[in-house]
Length: 306
Image 1 (cartoon, rainbow, N blue to C red):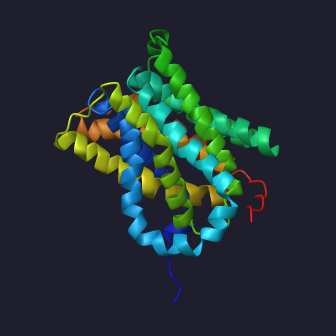
Image 2: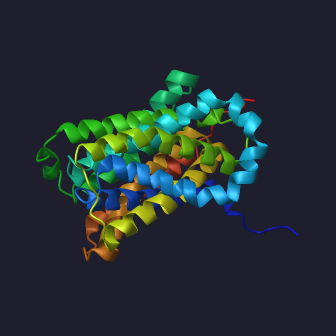
């Protein structure tokens, strides 16, 4: 029987949901600043994700152990960049910068991915892709500035902003390297990389603890840990990996611009903010840019490592 709808074959829906879950991660990460030490939050996120996934993938991991052992160096690279490095930098940044700064800098993520794709594989952005990225970036700026560019002149850059830039640089490397994902199941790949990421974060979280940093244990912080361990980790990373596999990193990267869009919607729905004209203009620009960039012809994907 033919299945009329398969989520795994819908890259644009997969990448849109990924941005939604990651927007929630950014909002909650900022909410948790001061309540959960950043390195501990990163460790708990991936430890929790590991505990969620292991019962479902343990047999597959044993079966695919030869592939894991053969590709251990590149799996370690994925763990160090997309899991440990990005999260350590991003969560630490949210303790030292304003949400406005972070959202604005995060919206440049597609450009970092494009630079890595060019540096590693020689991929060039087409004029259509570049135009789409710049159009959606304009929409992001409109939303963040609430329709008034004066807000940009009032931004004060600090060390936290630099950490956001470094986190995007690290994640851009992860996204660009996804075309070299070892030939193994998506679940096994994700399990192997998040286990590696949790292991890499463990000593840094321990050092943070020894320095006196403590988590304030209460329902709200436990809810944050549960959310970040499940939706933006397991679910979103599976969706992002599959989306990049289907349409390539350069065409997938404009979906980063949906994060501040979803962030604004979350603020409207749950924080009582009032929808305004600049929201509609920004949303229209972002969605137009994503449409333009993702309908460009993608380069032929490289063969995965064996």
